[in-house]
Length: 245
Length: 143
Image (cartoon, rainbow over all chains, first blue to last red; front, side):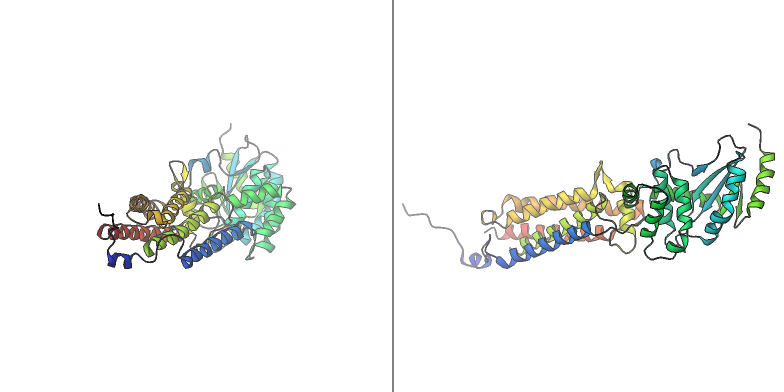
């Protein structure tokens, strides 16, 4: 019986070169370089300080708005409810929040006449930091300190509004508002309130709001800077007309 | 062999793209280098999960499997028309179909384009074509 001979064709042998396995050092070298570069790049990205970004136009989920109707201040039994649609970066909003609002708070909200709601309407087209600031406010609310954070954000407005790196200034505002900064950082990184902010903005657009600040009083929109006296007069008129509870 | 080497390199690149998106998804990377913001919109959308699992994680596992099979196919004992070579077009074909579904979601449901996802789609499609070519080559020249 003749010994079996391998059935190898000459031309095929030429085609199958180079032999498979670890013989191709150049290929494995390249693979190792890609692996090291990839792992190194990812490790660098994970280790480096994270820039915060709050996405716009996210899909709003039911969970984003469940039970949330704006940041409320005042008595539930107040005869009148006023909703303010505002943008933290808007200079008029900042002026209103720091000059007029303290008086409104003292004379209308703390006296039980008015319940106030603050809703975000970030004007992303002209205010690149508005949504970031709105999220910082939401993270303040996450720790039960929305209103101290609201005041701190507006107080620091000149430092962050036009900054190309607003996040550290807002973090400073969080610290001054008494927030747990570690929790605040985690909240900002997660962008978990992006949907809530988007929902507020969508609602404002549906109502016809197109500038900030705009106040919703008894179903009517009042756009622009209202003096606290004008607001008190409006509230008095609207409150008088409001049905008794 | 060059096709198999190409597949190994492509699947490794895909693995890193998926890992990048997944690390963002779980909060270990702050922002995505995307340019148009579409990546974050897509990654934060409800469609970024499939049957409760992050799509980026599915991609990570999928590319790891393709890389493992591509490296196996490079070993001498799998040199011919072996099972890894036969499995690669099937698995990558499934990945291409899944990717097509994800592209549909981006275009018509989420209305945002994630450039990294597009890069992954191109890689997996090229991988599929290479795996089919390799399979075809072995059918005509099985040695």
